[in-house]
Image (tube, rainbow, N blue to C red; front, side, top):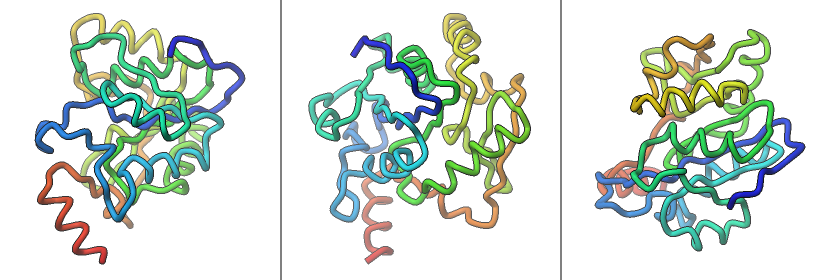
Length: 200
């Protein structure tokens, strides 16, 4: 997809563009969890709070297009990591704020995304980052679209680490320490099986 989408104040993107090596290179977003594609949980959360939701994917594009949302691929074919997906989304929309979520966290809901949005606005921060009381979760973000050039320059310099990009920015940390289980993610077949068994 190459057409820029206009008139969306808040956009959201689910990052599903990785190789998922620990998942035997399966496409994590399309794996079934409780009889639903794993990505569907993130899409449900984002669609409740964003004006437009994107899927960032680099393979199985037809399967992702079946969700009825714009599917965008990284600008390179080298699987450059989550920042590449975020940049691609920013380039495809003139949104004021972008919400970001990974595709493998079924317990992070719309109300948690709303807290990121609210905190970023209240603090007039460049970016709001989820925090579990111990560590940051840097793929749960609400960020100003005005960071597009900053991110473009960072990636053009050959850097890829999300934490290194976030470090110098004007950030606010949103404390979810009272419900750390919302960050549970699925990285392997064993984790998937354990979570399925736990939730039955």
